[in-house]
Length: 45
Image 1 (cartoon, rainbow, N blue to C red):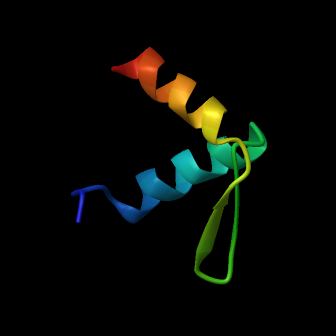
Image 2: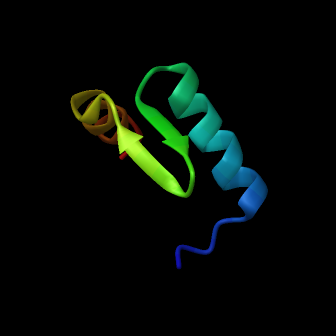
Image 3: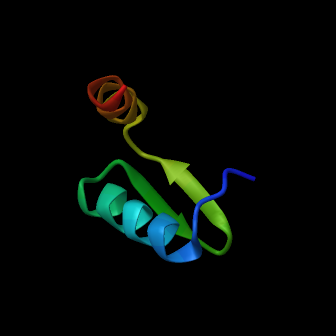
């Protein structure tokens, strides 16, 4: 558990999908651009 609301999580996942970083469906998340996610994480740290 990370303490995030469903709405916030859904919004972030939607943004990641639009950017082409992930694909999700049927209870799964596919990281389509792991390097891009890493760079995004470094920018916000």
